[in-house]
Structures are given as C-alpha cells and as structure tokens.
Amino acid sequence: MIVRNNRQVTRLFFILVLAAAAFGWWYASTHWQMQPDTIALPTGQDFNWIDFIATLGEEAIQLFLGLTGPTQ
Image (cartoon, rainbow, N blue to C red; front, side):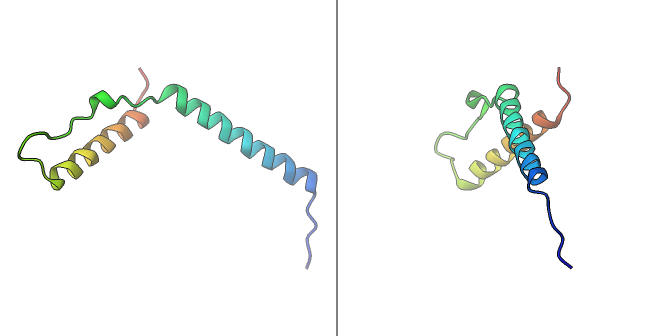
C-alpha cells in the first residue's frame, strides 16, 4: 500500500527541526561556557598517561554535572 505524504507538512517539520537546532545551539553557546583555566593537568617528572586520562575523565564528569545541575 502506497501512502502519499504532503510535501508542505514535511517541509514545515524540516524547518521546525532546523529552527530547534539553531535555538539549541544559541542556548548552549550563551549559557554553557567552559573555562579552560579550571582544568588542572598533572605537571612535573611524575607525569604519565594514566593520570592524564583520569584527569580528563574527572573534568568531563564535572562538566556534565555542571551542565545538568540546577541553575543558580
């Protein structure tokens, strides 16, 4: 069975999806700014990849918690 779709409705929903994506990009770029100064990387002679990856993972978790937490 062939179902005919109305192109106007398809175009309307496509425009709505593009508008929602633009709004989401605007909201994220204005409200969620990452500060590179807060990232603490290990320094000195004892630097190794495990500490580096653990630090990046911890920062990613903190970023996620900050993005999903309540706004002050």
